[in-house]
Structures are given as C-alpha cells and as structure tokens.
Length: 353
Image 1 (cartoon, rainbow, N blue to C red):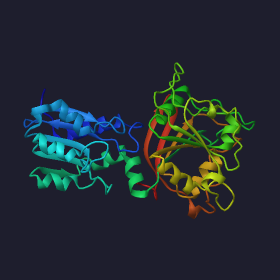
Image 2: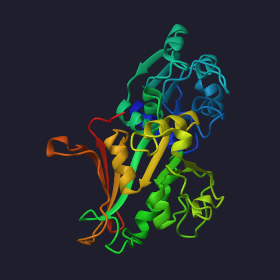
Image 3: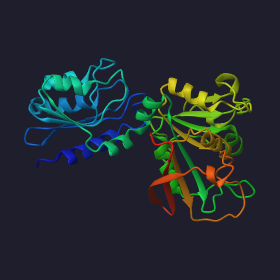
Image 4: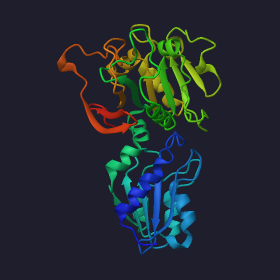
C-alpha cells in the first residue's frame, strides 16, 4: 500500500466517523487512521456505538506493533478520562506513536486535556487539520456540549411556490420517492424525530426510519416525539404502533409557554437529559414557526418539488417575523438534486454551532 498524506488520512478519518451517525449518542462520532513511520495506513476505526471501543482503540488493535513511531490521525482530540472505556491518550502513549494529528479539540471539560497529556509524554501533537470539515460532521454533539441542548434540524417538503399540501389538505406525495428515501436516511442519523399533534391528526405518520424499497425498518430507530400540549394524540395513532419508542410531550409534563403550548426550550432540555443530541423537526408549519421564532433551529433542509399548487397550506407558519428587517437570514451550504427534486441545506446566520 502506498503512503498517504496527512490531509488524505484526515479525510479518510472524517468519512469513517460518519459511519457512527445515529448510533453513538450521547457520545460524539470519531474516526481515526493510523499511519506507520513511512506514512502507510496500518489501522483505522470509528466509534460505532455508545459504550463501545473508541476509534483510536479500534485502529490501534488493527495496527498492533506497526503503530510504534507512527502517526495517529483523529477527528476529535483523544479523550483523557475513564468512562465506560479507558482514556485513549493512555492507549496511544502505550502504543508508542510519535505524533497525533487532530482536527477538533474536545470542548467537553470532562474528557478534555488529551493533547496536553500526549505532549507531556513527548508525543508531537498537531491540531486544526481539516477542522471545519470535521466539525461539520460532528456538529450535533459539539453543539450539544457547547449549548447544553440538542442540535435541531428542520426538515420540510414543499412545492416551488412553498406549499406543503393542496387546498383540500392532500399532501401525498409532494416530493418523489427518491426524496422520501433520502429523508428516511436522514432520520436514521438523528436521535429523535419531532412533530406537532396537528401533523399526527392530519397525516397519521409513522415517523420511522425505513427502506422504502421493501418497507423494512432500520435496525436503530429514533425516538418519536409528539408535541401535544393537551394530550390529543389518539391511542390508535401510528406513532404508538410499537415500531419505535414514542413520547407524547404535553404541557403538563414538560411545562407550558405563555400561550399554553409546550415550552420548547424545556422540551429540548428534557431531550438533552435523555441523551438526545440531534433532533429532526418534521412538522407541521406551526411548530416549525414556533421553533424558528424561539431561535431553536440550527439547520434547515428543504426538499423542493418542481410543482406548483397556487393554494393550500404553506410549509411555514408564523415564525415571529413582522417586518422585512426581522427576516430570518439563511446561508445556503448545499444544493443537491434528489431525483426530480432539489434538497437545499442552509444555516440560520445566528445559529452556526
């Protein structure tokens, strides 16, 4: 195998880390690539599930003695504490690596200090390599540590004129099968899917992550959360079908906002305490507007179908914007064609991690 550059190894590590999306919470996603002194890859790994071995441990097990004198390329600063597993810094020191290259320093005060510990052991430490790319891949966990609440992605589907349904309320299907499959893949990367009771009453969604080609459920399912201030979710609703865990969050349980609805900040606090780090907000327009008005949306993903309705419910209701000067500005980070539809990803300018 030919030698690789540090940049190439880091890109590989970032790709490995992404394999843990949806299965590691409340832990971060992490990837690691080990190079021998000649720059050849001798080990690699990623953190696959909470409580399982960390990326560095998996990579070191593959490399064995070939790691000695080599370089560990890792997406997040190696941990420096003992939790359900031992500190990765100690394992790297014992393996005899000469250098550790990391992308993002650990903001968690419990686990931080790994770089200093490695340097104290005489290991060269290089930081900040591909930091933006690595941070983007681990943004939910990083955001939750920095802000103490889950990272919220608002996903919606609409026609090009912004309608989420026709005038008679019908909405199946605005977007294509390819877009719907993309949404199921997105659900599989988060810890919770959140909707309002209005969406449950109108559409009776399952909110599971599944393969639309054969209908099979993904092995791991996100928590289904229904924001239902007065407890109107029917006993026979499909979100109660047992295919995944479901929480009907009422104002009596979570706390009420000034209008008697569920306090959304308190809702996120409860989810964070339950280990939820990434939330997919799916509907409906009133709930999405309330999250946006409260400044609680961190990413927007819109699936836009090349269709026009001219009438019918809008994809977004009141978001607290009264004048053009209060508009919620977004920075578009990606536009991808998904079947005949467009998937547009954007970040609110005031919510960037």
